[in-house]
Amino acid sequence: MTEQDTPLTQTATHSSQTTSDTVLEIRNAEVTFGMDRGVSRVLDTVDLDVQRGEIIGVVGESGSGKSMLASSILDAVVDPGVLSGEITYYPDDGAPVDVLGLSERELKSLRWEDISMVFQGAMSSFNPTMKVGKHFEETLVAHDYDVDTGMERARELLSDLYLEPERVLGSYPHELSGGMQQRALIALSLILEPEVLVMDEPTAALDLLMQRSILSLLENLQEKYDLTMVFITHDLPLVAELADRIAVMYAFELIEIGQTEEILRHAAHPYTRSLLNATPNLDAPLEEMQPIEGSAPDPVNVPEGCSYNPRCPIADETCVADDPDFQSASPDHEVACFHWEDAAEAVPFTSEEQHAEPKASTAEENR
Ligand SMILES: Nc1ncnc2c1ncn2[C@@H]1O[C@H](COP(=O)(O)OP(=O)(O)OP(=O)(O)O)[C@@H](O)[C@H]1O
Image (tube, rainbow, N blue to C red; front, side):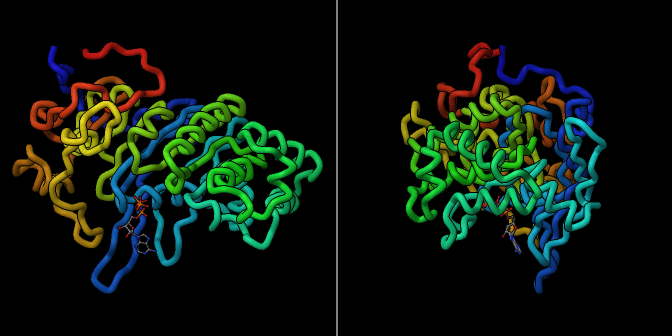
């Protein structure tokens, strides 16, 4: 059987996948900045449903809009960025929350108690003049949580992350290594028992070994605390080890989404396939790595039609004239490309080996 043998099914947007298990529903999320040289659209009509209890990896090149998506989820886009669309949070117990309609006060509580966020570079998130323990206490007090109970939870979380609680709580941030700081920050983000954890390049500043060990700790935390995780990164192989699903961004839009294994083995967007070929792979020789030709578009000047068309080997006049809708490449696998059925032939994988080890390696080598 060929790699792409699934018949084209009807056009659909992945928003149609909303189920009763959806914890976050993002519709038409758009972020613009007014610049001297025009409007910079740095997030372009993104629709995404995050399912309760899943780990979803959002990947893309630097500047593709991943951080804008992360901050949109919490209505935290920096000024003077303008966010529009709808972000709905469905708590486990309670009425749906219209995130963009919340007051500042309501947002403040949502941000720690329901949906929490961890950014790259723990040092910029901690106050360097305050001991780590004080950060936990202040967060508990600010949200009217019982400090004793909360600090018990802090100790448990720090232990879960293989840190010595007393030592870490009694240290200033700079007294801890980068890996310890980042783990302490993850513990802090979970102190108010949020249901969803959004992480924006949480391990980017760390060495490979520390990245891997944090990933496995995150997996344990997710199981223990029933968390939903949105893990944002440029590192596709890294997130593939953790994520149940992968969503790929290109030029401020989502262009493909599917189960991790499906994306790794049967990516249907020419960009995703090129991204996999451009990704270092421990199993494949370096010469098999192929950089993607051309450069990512400027947000003020995104190409008409499919924004990938100037770099795409199978683009034709349709791709220049129209922006493709999502199509179903296989169950739970959607791709925004007119010619996805030709992508496997046009952009073959350079390595026969799998590009990365997915979370659960259960599927056959090939369909
Ligand atoms: N404050 C700002 N004002 C104007 N444009 C911005 C601002 N912050 C980011 N951008 C632009 O928004 C676009 C998307 O940026 P974003 O940070 O979301 O990308 P990213 O995929 O997270 O990249 P990286 O992996 O490098 O963090 C980029 O073109 C960036 O230059």
